[in-house]
Amino acid sequence: MHANLTDSAQQEQKSGQLMRYTSLPDFVATGKAALAKGPVAVILVEDDIEVGTTLRHHQQAGFTTLITVMPAEFELPRDLESMVHRIDFVIRDQDDVLTAMNTLIKAAPPEIWMYYCYNAEYLFHPFCESRSVGEMLAFHTEERRGAMLTYVVDLYSDDLDSHPNAVSLDAAHLDRSGYYALARPDIANHGHPKERQLDFFGGLRWRYEEHVPPARRKIDRISIFRTKAGLQLREDHTFNDEEYNTYACPWHHNITCAVCSFRTAKALKKNPGSTFDIHTFKWHNSAPFEWHSRQLLDLGLMEPGQWF
Image (cartoon, rainbow, N blue to C red):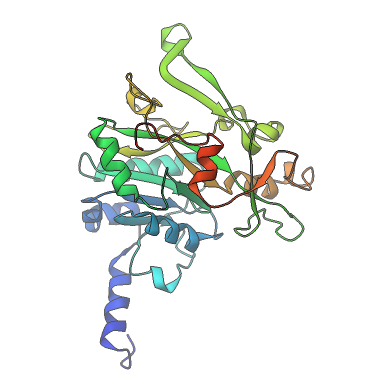
């Protein structure tokens, strides 16, 4: 440490070092106290695109703790180093996602609200401009719910010449129609539909489905959940507790949220099998994204339930 650093700068650097962990086992051994109070947001970093804006968005949403799981060679913005618990870990595929999330779920005490997403994804909940995510989850707890359904709403730049990776916060667009749901069959029960569970489709995964494996076409994700003993995330973004995978309780509609995501657009432009077939993501049902919950509520892309 340089001798000419001020005391506050030394403390900031020390805090940044203390909040960085060399591996998942290192975090479990020395840092899991960060999971003691929720809500906790876990950001899974796949590349170096919009990492800072993703973290700041969720910090402003009201999450008590931010955890980022990211490759060691990536840099965090300096102002975030002392505010984010960073775990060095490479996310290459869905198996890595399951390893990271299930390790954190197991390390957390029971009944902690946890949320996860990837970089360049942004959570919106009903009335988020005036109500924090903590207030929403307090209400959801009173509703005796242990998880919350989120819809992954694809975002994309309107100009791929200017933004070849399809990411632009200023020029973000989304599909205003083309979303639908199908019954979710229960293989263990002769294919009968599961109670209060649906598979949701739409967005770029639907419009460019020839480039997306069938198992990756759904846009529903149980992104928000309460930890408990034995809980495990599964490969299809559902949990081993079937009640966690329901969109509502048996009595009435519950809150749902939207995860507004550049992830699919990025992948379609990065993948050699699709990038040359896509010159623009815009179509007649594209609309500028307003970065406001009212637009998502009006489009039916999230539900306030009984939370007025």
